[in-house]
Length: 131
Image (tube, rainbow, N blue to C red; front, side, top):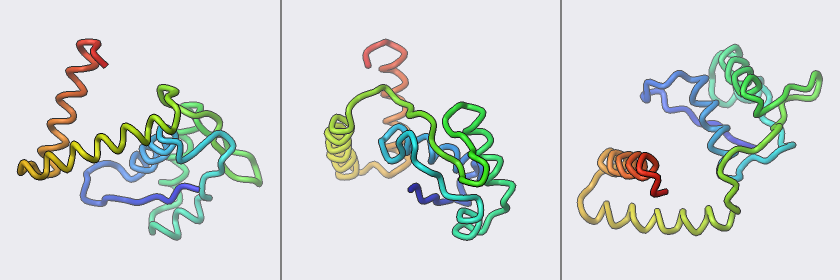
């Protein structure tokens, strides 16, 4: 089951942080079709947020067809998202990316520098059709 975390300093709306975390878990295999999301009550208790915020996030995920609410049972994942690469391929690529980030840190880049460089490279690669 997914465990939500909030970055209150991010400037991103709380409900969107929850939506993004579910989508990331779906892309990386942390959540699969049939898995149950935490109840709104559980999320409220762990994050100290308004229940309506959780419900808004779950409604957004439901609107996108990613989850479905089952009365009296909870909210369940309907479908996965992503390019369909096998989980083993995700792990291999993650290891390579971790090595690259280590090299970037050794070169003196901070977290924001790494994010900016990664965003620029991926944007260029997908614009040019390289990736």
